[in-house]
Image 1 (cartoon, helix red, strand yellow):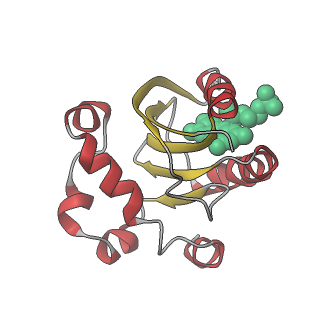
Image 2 (cartoon, protein in one colour):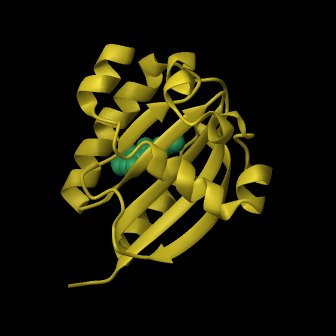
Length: 148
Ligand SMILES: Cc1cc2nc3c(=O)[nH]c(=O)nc-3n(C[C@H](O)[C@H](O)[C@H](O)COP(=O)(O)O)c2cc1C
């Protein structure tokens, strides 16, 4: 079995995005990721993205190269590259829009009230991991559908 690479990056949307735009993006991403054997989690909050991509190194590197060129966002910063195992193996791409206050109530408030930007993520790599993992269990397609 080939070794698994886990790559985490953050970026800024070029303009604020609503679920109406994010969900179709996610639908396509999930189909493409499932085909490539890529798993992960995407978080969005007030114009910023935080995403972890997991899969065979070549697949993850090819995908991040595509994502970096996507005109819908900018300032793509790679925060971490870790060796596996997968943490989000059940998710072709989990997703949570943290701009939604109902979810802030459901989450751990300290973590949720921390800044959601490159400066904070760069200085707090363990928090990045905690934040992403926080949604691993509660995120499921049925929940996403009821929240939008
Ligand atoms: C924040 C963000 C995250 C994305 N995540 C993925 C992803 O996980 N998988 C994926 O295939 N495309 C993802 N995309 C979309 C890709 O950038 C790209 O549009 C898609 O892979 C189609 O590329 P293609 O037109 O070259 O086939 C993401 C885009 C953005 C803006």
